[in-house]
Image 1 (cartoon, rainbow over the protein chains, first blue to last red):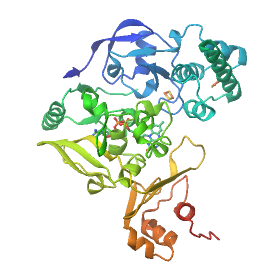
Image 2: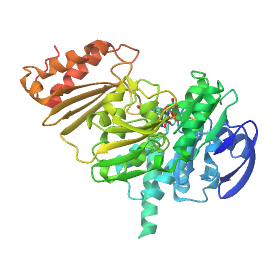
Image 3: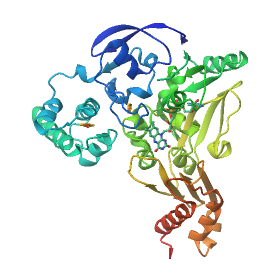
Image 4: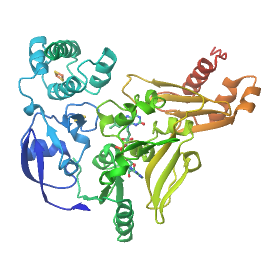
Length: 160
Length: 273
Ligand SMILES: Cc1cc2nc3c(=O)[nH]c(=O)nc-3n(C[C@H](O)[C@H](O)[C@H](O)COP(=O)(O)OP(=O)(O)OC[C@H]3O[C@@H](n4cnc5c(N)ncnc54)[C@H](O)[C@@H]3O)c2cc1C
Ligand code: FES
Ligand code: FES
């Protein structure tokens, strides 16, 4: 049985690199990524599961890092926005103006990236279902939607 | 941020998990079972619940699996809702589960955590009750099994230290399942009313979430239901005493929505004026 108590040394696989960090069992993945590993892409918005600003990928699936303990993620692959490299969704966010203040952007990018990886042919209902997990306080939804549609088109073209 | 210390245990077998809870309780350690963690972390962070330790059940392999057998689809309590929604054999429950929380949260939120949760909604229990599913739990003497309807009354009633292990959903769903979820503002929100109705040859099931301070349901024999002159009023009468008023909707409005929806499901009449 795995047991953690007090300060514990764990290894986290973040953005394809192993990071050794000292955490407490009650530390959320979000806090550990930001304060111990040093990746501040995932944002602390509501820390209540509502806004999606903290979204990261865990073994390829989007999850809210504020609702997860860091110790739970040992042995899993964590991907933050810092681990995205020149992807279609990033390029489309720039060309379509998918952000205003940028606070929500990392969360939207991670979720949209995972959607295009898992379901490149996602229909409108699926896109809405996935993206409704993220909120944009600047209400820049139109730019975000356009960016997703453009990135989807490019991902589909590459597959042909 | 959770503002106080917590111990974390991750057993690998059911026996280990049960013994872990039992011994922690004997040492007066306040421990919680932990699956998706979405409710536990929220409650600990807000200080709504106090705990010294969590026992993460995700180390028990079979509790994260969906197995298809002759008569039942066996769903481990740690299976996230999205895994159920995407499973080809679970099409009947999909339209109800895919309204819960949001897509990202559903990657973590588990069926067991939803049913065993403390929040009033626990919407995932409705289709399982409607389909007359069985549940298996682990207690002192091992794995026990029962009809969910026999152990769910406002909440899942398990013996002390026991935990939910698996849910057995009948493969051959009898009847016609209908559901409708209504929210006060946006779709990603808790419901002011989520109605699930299943009409089979032998019974009529109606289950509600968001209507009362806990999920409520009623089962009526089909022959009795067929004799009702006004099913809309008869069904509403069974639930009216449980209706709640809160900042989202009044009791009267919830009852109105219920009657209207039952009329739509059954092709009956309901004059709201
Ligand atoms: C943003 C957001 C929106 C949400 N919206 C909805 C909604 O619309 N409708 C809805 O119904 N729910 C909704 N929820 C989910 C709900 O509030 C709970 O968070 C969730 O159901 C808990 O599931 P979990 O797997 O995360 O459980 P956990 O947080 O791990 O556990 C929840 C409770 O169950 C106990 N427990 C867990 N597993 C077991 C087990 N196997 N045996 C015995 N006890 C166990 C724990 O001790 C705890 O008391 C939402 C949650 C969030 C974060
Ligand atoms: S910070 Fe995690 S959902 Fe808002
Ligand atoms: S761009 Fe400001 S919150 Fe979305």
